[in-house]
Length: 207
Length: 207
DNA sequence: CGTCTCATGTAAGGAGTTACATGATTTA
DNA sequence: TAAATCATGTAACTCCTTACATGAGACG
Image (tube, rainbow over all chains, first blue to last red; front, top):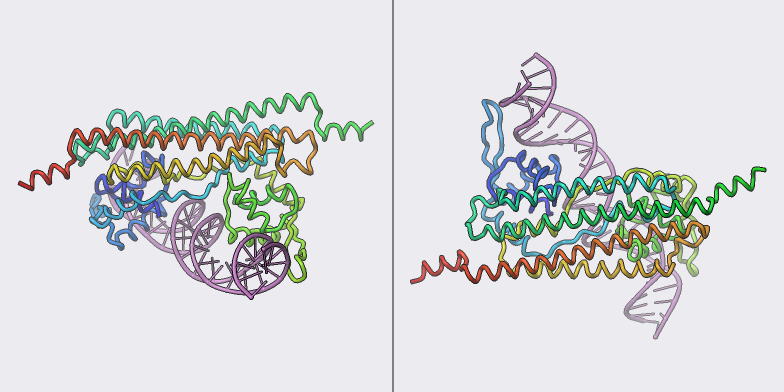
């Protein structure tokens, strides 16, 4: 149930509406956790029912409405308890490496776009993480507001650690993709020297 | 639907029973994909119904039974099509970094066991990946059997790439955990110089 | 004869995705 | 006034987990 704790963590910097939280997932928080709109709204209602949040109906213009959620004392306790509890590591499911494991059922031409897409994917993630890191180095995060100055060092240190970790892992994935392209190129060299099975069969059959 | 493709990939090295596939997930394949028993048996039935597999009831002893599955032509086509299709990257959900992001709601004493557990977790994964890599370097994988010698280079190259990638990412996670311990130690130094809020409050309150 | 491993299944529920649905406000 | 953005919801479905359930074969 980490969605719940991600939401508690975000709301611990101040009251927000579901829509704000959704945007937050598309931005800074999105680098470590994702959630869709269809997940967020019901979960907020459930959390309210469980006494972790309180909601205040706010007006938008004349007829519009908006529910502003705040973390309760019980909600903060829940967040703290979760942070202290051991990390629940999910079972490993790695679609990229699963696919590469079985690349031999395809051709070398299929391998190249795969690795290129991998590099592109993690290049985007790398940029995102680097921007976040830059914001943190400038002390630009909403998490610092409403907190004692003496806590700022700790907040920035751990948030920076997270961003650095993401930079490192994205960099590693990009390097891995490049290595994949190298290997593919090397295999292609080999293929030219030794004609493929299909080619040999065709030669044997024809003429 | 990657479970389906993981199963097709495993069965593409030869016919197997559900139990063998389950074991396979606990060993070599487990480094890139996980699946439980409760998922595997029904999925195999579904795949059979969809014409991707055929099953042969085999006897075990006198009364025991066993369903041996083989990939059909349609199954191999499905596997190839999936390998050629773009990777479906799942949304990012990183429980470790989510938690570290909110470490400031806890105390420094809570941080240490968290990073130590992280290091232990990825040390185990690293060992697993290194063993797999060693097996591959020795040419020890069932995937080579039933395949032309000229394909062996490609199979070993890509499986090796996968194992190397896992080694690299586990190594990076271990380094990240150590960095977390360093940061925690450094913050602890700082705290000793500047007494914490709670301590100051206690001092102010008491005489 | 008891325990471990082999072998296969089902049922209930949690988490997440995709798609559908609605309506107000702001901006061009 | 049309389009984009703000704002909140629901329904159906897929995937996965946890737990329950059963029984045969192998080994000591």
